[in-house]
Amino acid sequence: MSAGRPALHEQPRRGDFPAASLQNHRRMTGPDPQSDSSMRRPHEDTTMSRETGAMARETGAMVARETGVMARETGAMSRETGTMARESGAMARESGAMARESGAMSRETGTMARESGAMTRESGAMARETGAMSRETGAMARETGVMTRESGAMTRESGAMARETGVMTRDTPLDDCVRMGTLFGMSNKCLRGMGFSQMYFGDKIVEPVVIVFFWLLLWFLGIQALGLVGTLCIIVIYIQD
Image (cartoon, rainbow, N blue to C red; front, side, top):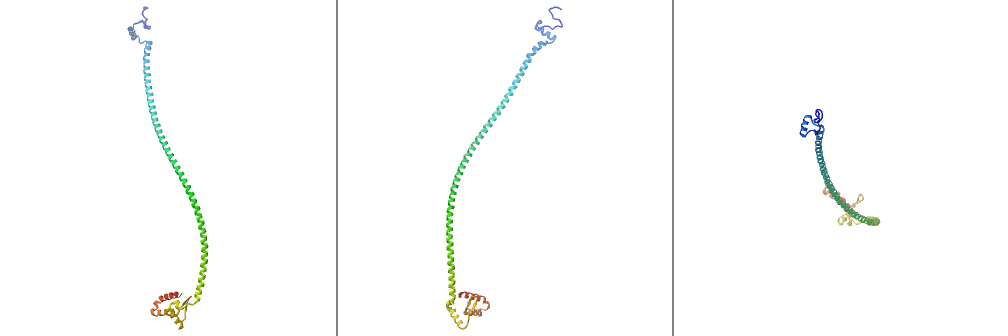
């Protein structure tokens, strides 16, 4: 073989052929491993760059989404914080109002306590006055009791004098005309002069004129009028006193 051509089994070098012959030679002999690796390297780099860009975009999208979600959550938390702050302000205002009401109630309670103290002092003064009046009433009651006992003694003395006067009056005989009137008195004197005697009905004295009057009524009216006559007799007996 000549020196200018390569051997059949030798791998031709890249500078030994022109560009068109090199392509034909590649079709015939197959791809060159070194040239293929050098050609694949930019393609792989491009693919990796695209994948890296896609990953970067995905990462950016994920970061953006997560950032948006976090921003929305942060906004919701801010709104909740504002709501809680407003509620806390309202509660603080209500607490202030309640504190003012409690202060007003405390003042009213103090006023009522002072009024109760004044009323208690007045009640004590009234109780002392009532005690003084009770003592005076007791003294008056004791004086009244003494006077009552004296009045009782005088009443007993008056009763004794009245009994003595009654005894003296009973011992002194009265005229029949004075005791029974003129008609009955004169009739009683005539009957006693004729021999009619007095009758005793218990501690009562029945005069003859009453007995005669009883029998006359019984003769004119009959036994049916016995009750009426008895009643009249009792009345007459008590009239004699």
